[in-house]
Amino acid sequence: MSIKLMAAVWDLALPLPRKMVLLSLADQANDNGECFPSIATIERRTGAGRRTVFEQLLQLEQMGVLTRVQISKQRLLFKLNYA
Image (cartoon, rainbow, N blue to C red):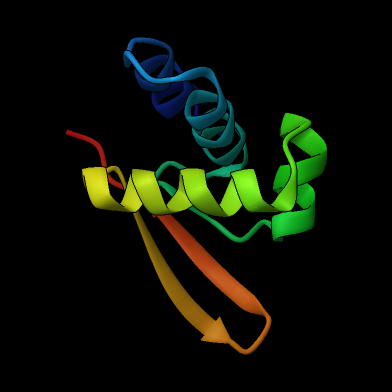
């Protein structure tokens, strides 16, 4: 868990579903901003549906806050980009 990342997320003005997805990722990230949760894990932690999770991840990517890297067919690396 990266306290630094979580604190940064709390300060962002984001719609609630987007903030929850980002908080979930920050809570699971190492100090380099990297984590590997499954989509099902993000769904369970945020209470959001699968479609909502995918929509929010896309929005976070478009904002430049998040980068997704396909590691294998079923594994993604999420990299949180912060200043």
